[in-house]
Image 1 (spheres, rainbow, N blue to C red):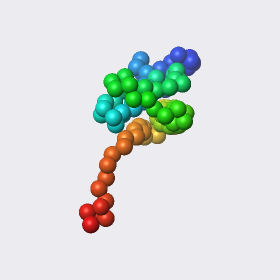
Image 2: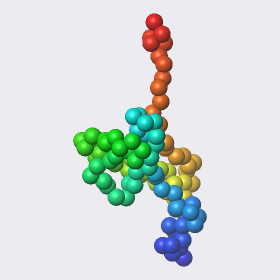
Image 3: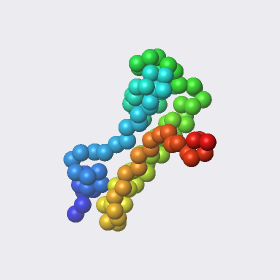
Length: 103
């Protein structure tokens, strides 16, 4: 018989639990800092240079980060329940030089 605890341990991959940690990069000072996705803040400030995130973007940050977390949770769940290959989604911003930029 499968207990709830053994099902959860199986789902999360053993005794270690995986979770999504959002990291926000402050372009002002070039530092990264983590965001707690479990406690939604009404304001976000860079702990290094005190630059504040615009209030109208805070909801978007939490929605985007929690969506990535939900996708990764489902990857782990499908791997256990349906023996599907496991993947992990990570989102990163990077500059790409397009050929048209060199003209």
